[in-house]
Length: 297
Image (cartoon, rainbow, N blue to C red; front, side, top):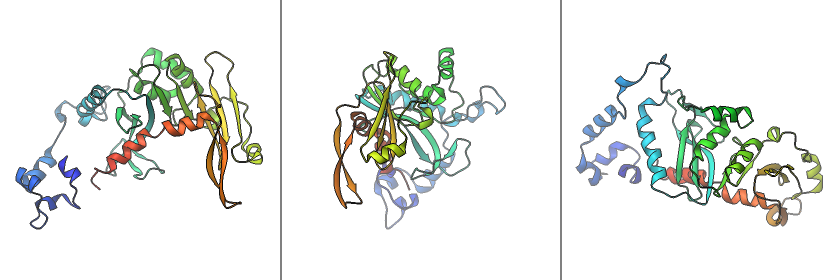
């Protein structure tokens, strides 16, 4: 941990004559350090089930470590009032079945992790994408049939134990009206961006119509039932769809944007649900930023 904070271009430089780091060099010799690192195991490989075993665990080698980390992450910090669910990437380019490619991430290859994070950047819960031991109960399997899907199940698993009334913001990968309905029943106010094909044919204006009306134009629709879900399509540089089970369009505020045709800044209308989402989302991204300061490059 100390070497991750006091970083040098190469590990061996901590023992180098001209760049010697006394805290590291006095604790252990270079060869002894590399010997331990090369043989370090978190779990007993002799207890690992075979690949054809029904109990085979893809992350067996680090399962015990991850379980303990997850337990203590949640135990030693109270939930913040605003949480977000998003993915993070652990950079890795070696041979691994769990390795994923994400084009828009700074580190494109690695292990994808689903995270529940606070606005401060603290991660309360996490799960590894591709973990084959994520078991579903009968009720959870029933939820999958009602449109929540496996991505929605990931959200519900991460939010288990979160106090009612906690605001939660989601990435569009997880979003669906069915998930927002479920969170409403759990008394968890939520908002999320939503992909157009997941709106269940909600009659919102087409992007062409909003573009003609100008920047800041919007259209919205709310379901009629008591557990209503609001969908808002707002046009900025392009259209974006945001859904919520608690937030509203009002009050409409003004946001500053640069007008390329007039070559000056102007103010355009912005619904309250968009403002709430922009403010509440980003806890996991903040965590990524904080971790990057201490990650060996």
